[in-house]
Image 1: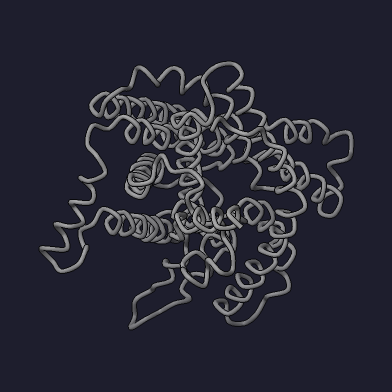
Image 2 (image 1 turned 45 degrees about the vertical axis):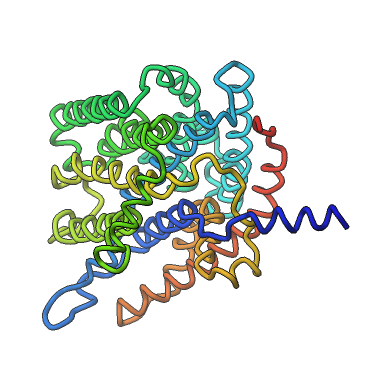
Amino acid sequence: MNEIKNRENINENYSNRLDILLALRGFACFMVMISHLNPPRDSIIYKGYDLSWLLFSDGKVAVWIFFCLSGYLMGKAFYTERYTGDTLGLIKFWRNRILRIVPLYYFSVLVCILFVDPNFLKTENWGYLIRILTFTSYLGLPTVNGVLWSLSTEMHFYACVPFIYNFLKYRLFGKINIIVGALFILSISFILRLAVWIIFYKQVHENIIYLMKYWYSPVIMNLDLFLCGFLVNALLAYRKYTNDDLNSINNNGKKKFGFAILSPQIIALVLMASLYLFTAHHKYNQELHGLLDPARGVRTSTTFFILPLLTALITSFFIFVFESNSYNEFRKIKNLSFAAILKNPFRTLEIFGILSYGIYIWHQQIIIKIAPIFVGQIPIESFYARFTATLILSTLFSAVTYYLVELPAIRLKVKEKS
């Protein structure tokens, strides 16, 4: 009886709040899915205004959000000492990352080869297959699944995480040092992108292979996104001001305006929504405007230079604001369940965050298979039909593979330092 009471008391101390980072991961996954569904142009007209751009999610921005989130979460694992910076901690970290990524990755490759593109079993394609299996492929090379390239980039970053942590831990201490370090990283990334812009100016504008190989896929070209998220940990772990400062902002907002309209959380949500709206509008009215073949290359310097920076800053701010008051709390949120969702319906969003890896893996192949089915005379209706079918099928597929592939592998992970 005492054990049951203790469990009940522990459970009561756990929060039933929304895990906002899981929700953000689900949101980014939806952005990728919508971008791959190719929404129709000139399909939403209101009082003479073309609002179709609202559907033109920028998949690149979604992937950058994933990278920034990964940078933060991998850094958090070390800064909160779930893993140590020594050899044993490094091995545990890599082992757990492999168990988290590789099983579903390899399973998806196997399924795609057997049921989608058996040609990869031919000897002339073994080179491409080896690159896929060793995480050395990039977007633009022949592949069994077009979304796998980003996982190669993620794995390259995971290989570097322990070394980055050990290098930065004692060098970036204090708010000023962290900000200066972040500015240095952003400056280096700008110089790298500028070099690609100058050297391959014609190619990145006219040939998407060059754009993907030298700008979009390499981990070094995405380091600012990974490291901005990573450095949020340094700012949270070593900041001199306390959580009460953030709370006082909320209280001041309530006293002055009657509600927390100026709270950091509201500002972060507005900025994230604005990022989607701005990038969707830019994609529709700049990158794709009057373009018959959208797969040629980049058209504007805004996409090439500004959007990665904007995504890194807004996502990092978003993470900082929502993690400030619970940074050192692990497993203090109640496990997601039907009862938890009944008490807090917003936690439904976590489902898509939990299944986001599987949805990301399966959605493009599902789109390819169902696209010929949903063809009609009204483009927007066909789009919504494809979207609904893709959402349902990819969620079902990811739920099945989560329980059959992901979860058994997760249970094999080495326990972190408590």
